[in-house]
Length: 75
Image (cartoon, rainbow, N blue to C red):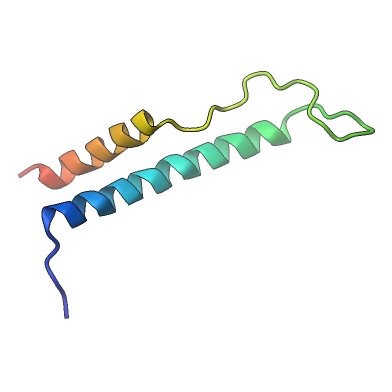
């Protein structure tokens, strides 16, 4: 049995999808960054934390959600 979603439910789903997409992109970038860093032999700490990816902002998530929503909203 399928149910129709109201506008609020659709927007909540799109926001959740956008959050997941942005989080996956950050995780991928961070993993690549972390694997390519030079580490101290004794401590294992990263010695050159240059160009570390920044954690996604709310604005980045909302921008992605708006892009996804524009697809749903277009006729």
